[in-house]
Amino acid sequence: MLTKVLGSSPKLRVIEFLIKNKESSYNLVELRKFANTGYSTLKEIMPELEKEDVVYVDRIIGKSKLYKINKDNLLIQAFIHSMKFKSKKRKRN
Image (cartoon, rainbow, N blue to C red):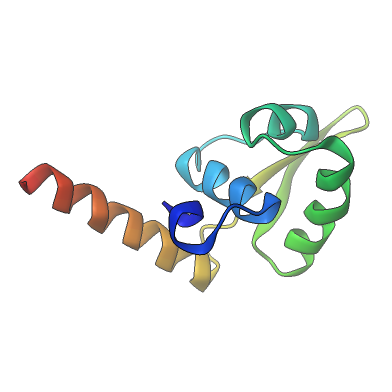
């Protein structure tokens, strides 16, 4: 939904994927596959998203950081709410 409205950028694909899978955490290799984004791009944008408090490191396994969406972020809450509203609206039709 986000990418349909705001365009398809790597950041938006990652955010949308993590929102849809908000109960799980993912490393960069998994995000590369599921968000259809290059690994080097992820290495660049994930620290930015972390700095903006959009994602956080849920845990570290070995050298791999596992990222999770920050559901406490107001922007993310708004996206989650709008996605729920849109899916409810579809069910009514």
